[in-house]
Amino acid sequence: MKTPQNIDSAGNQPVEREIKRRTIISFSVFFICLTIGGILFFKLFNQPATASGVQPTLRKALNANEKYSACSSAKKMKPGHLKKKVL
Image 1 (tube, rainbow, N blue to C red):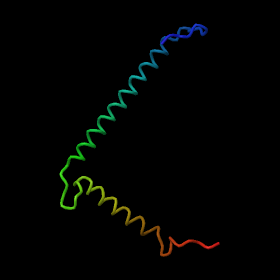
Image 2: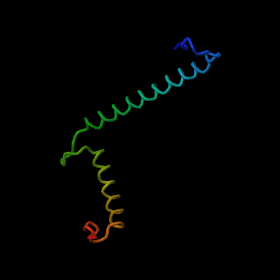
Image 3: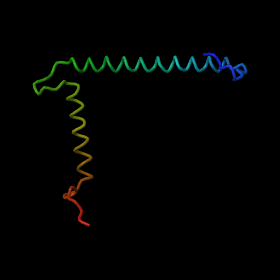
Image 4: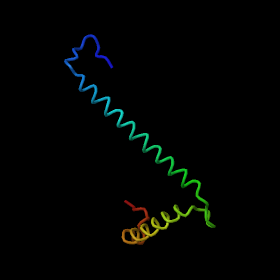
């Protein structure tokens, strides 16, 4: 990338080199993460479903979520918490 005609470059070549290096690193990390995410998605998507129709890995996550949700919601919610308040 060249400096425009009306701006003095003032010897900023190390800065441009650093920007280029960081850009390459950033895009490399982005594409590595994108690839890993795609591989994990397709691995999960292609797992055989159980009798309930859900993959075993998802079933474990759903059970953990249900356990956490039941524990936390029982502490926070009181009877009648969904009633509308009349002003």
